[in-house]
Structure formats: C-alpha cells, structure tokens
Image: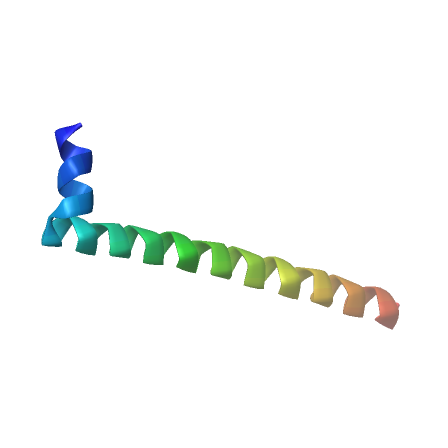
Length: 49
C-alpha cells in the first residue's frame, strides 16, 4: 500500500505514472495503426485479384 501512496503523491511517482500512461497509450496507438493498415492492405490486395 505504501508503494501506491508514493506513486500518487510524490513527484517521482507522478512522473513514473505519466510515463506508464504514455507508454501504454503509445502501444495502443501503434497496435491500432498497424491493424488498420493491415486491413487496408488486405482489402487492396483483394481488389487487385
């Protein structure tokens, strides 16, 4: 419980939390971006057949 208190109340904890959120957000963006382009590429390949 002490770790959560430090995470949400100290300067270092808040910066760590910001980095964690940023990394997770970037990961979600990259996965969605890749999946979208994979679907677009597949649809284009089907039309060219």
